[in-house]
Length: 230
Image 1: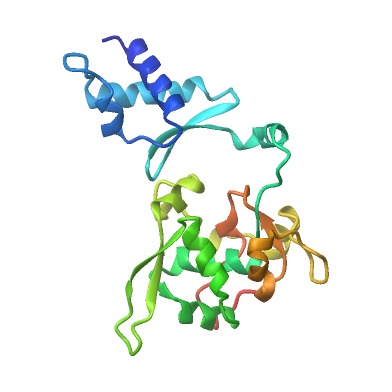
Image 2: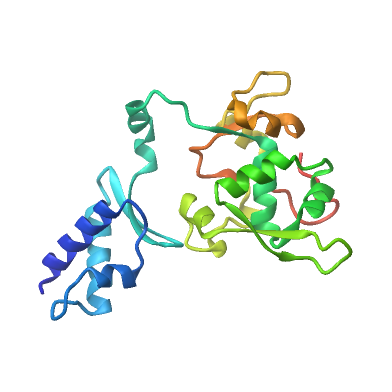
């Protein structure tokens, strides 16, 4: 089978799937006698990525495999297709998510020690419902508290292949500059939070749109000293 034919099949399958596909899943769509070699399939994917370099869509690799998606730069126009406002999450939720991402496995009590405030049950529930966070075990101490870690869905949502792709703490920029960039609500302002998530804003100031792919850069302080996130 020609490289062009393989490329067209991969393109069609990824567009139709609506979710990331692994190399094995892509190979599985080819019948007996027409299945390409792995290197041929990888080359077809690389060629497609080059084809989309100057277009409004892209082919990316995330934790769950390869997927087709709209480029982030196209978001202002694509978002006008729907009148629904994106879900907005409190800063407290984002801080909690970032601590799980960078310190996993971590218990709820350890998160509270770092943040200096209690973690609302609704925050943990929301993160689990989003399938961004899951229980990965229990700490071997009295009470055996649950330890939390991120999921493959978390990596997929933020366009990450793995945890190694998270920005290092040294790469994180000034929190005040990031707040301005993400248009976080300032203290005293009314932030838009869906009714079913209203409880999440009780222990943190401001909200941020679900659409932002840089959540993990918003909220993590350095691991030294008291590790308090402001």
